[in-house]
Image (cartoon, rainbow, N blue to C red):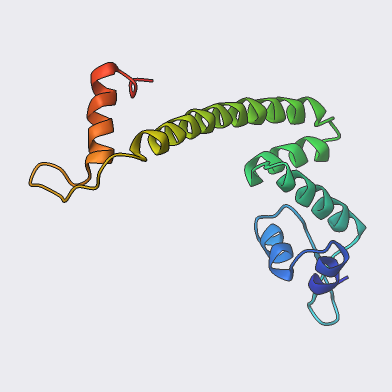
Length: 144
């Protein structure tokens, strides 16, 4: 099948197919008659895998490593588990950081609700932000 047919079959774009061809994750066969790139069942299977892995936020490099293992006839499952465990740990760190930020934002909203608006001075642009930064630094809040 041609680029557009493969893209349509897997509900993606022709540009996506071209990209993964360019980075050599899928390999078409050139038609002898007209020079078109023809994608077979193996390319379709690989692209389906690639799209699924990307939905789990695997990088192109990680996907390439997985495919190398599979191409050697080795199971890629241990590598996949290792990558996904790392990805989960990183996601958990980001989630906890987002929760800390959320708490700070809610606290700022509550604290700033009744504070007056002030015009900028030569020493301060917005007392709401700069006052809290100075206060946080004094009590060590930003030293996480």
